[in-house]
Image 1 (cartoon, helix red, strand yellow):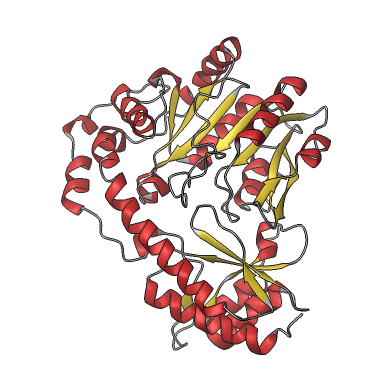
Image 2: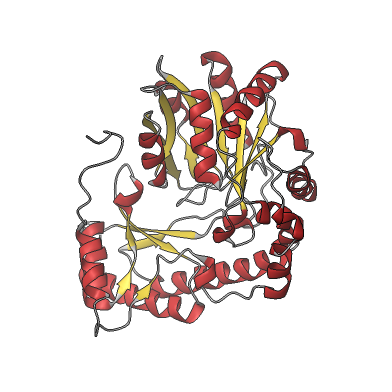
Length: 397
């Protein structure tokens, strides 16, 4: 009776089952080092400004447009101007978030059974989104280099392309590795797209959270003309407001391809018209919250990053891998222990929730993934408990 695109097995994994037990009434408090919802992490929001913007009388009018209201698209274009990129509002399509943006682009590019190349390690949501669109996800590798951090294995990327491949997805910075797309990697992706007739999808939701300056990084792929390119972003991370559900797709590339893509994408988005009028009218005011919100988040990320490194300093059984940006820290475990066993033990015995690396399809090794967003005091306490558990449970290599 039901579609094969929707899994039939919804049973809990070991960590999820242990979490249900730990959250039972009367259980001790939990330190959640996976929390990535900024609205639950103690940040200050300008409530009068945000609520006032959402009360615009224009929201009472229904003015559907396949690409979204002109004023909202102009506000998005204004954001790109602030970061040094020129974007034509006519090349923008508003969505209810990047998840929907992915599905719209998959609809545009792929028939059932076609393939989309996605990086691993990576965010597991893409496995779900490709499955729901009846397209096949094929992983290509990110590899960790001691001097350069995480990079695309370009030979493996090329070898992953088949006659059914339709697009390459790049997440910049990647979740959870925090690695940015580099200029040489973009050139290689453009070349592969030209050689094999592919599109490039670049997810930039964490792109404003970079550490330091690196001229090798791509600040944004918006405007890339080396291949048909779909650049995704949205309010969820950009202004720390995932509940407002505004994302966008920017289309660029060779003129004839980009023009055809915009025409066809407008057909897809016109069938949904999903973006709330209230959010679209509020968009210019919400963008004004970007800088003060990001200043708070960046301070938290750096404080928690320092705390984690201080807590595990001196432990031979682990190391914190290089992070260029984003909201996550990756801890590599060198001892003979599985990351799942360690995560379950931390939860049950220490009251600390972290993600095991297998959630993100690390190709080899044992890893723990932590969000750097929780309140600093909670994070430091959780990191200290993590270090103590590693010290007692993982023998030095």
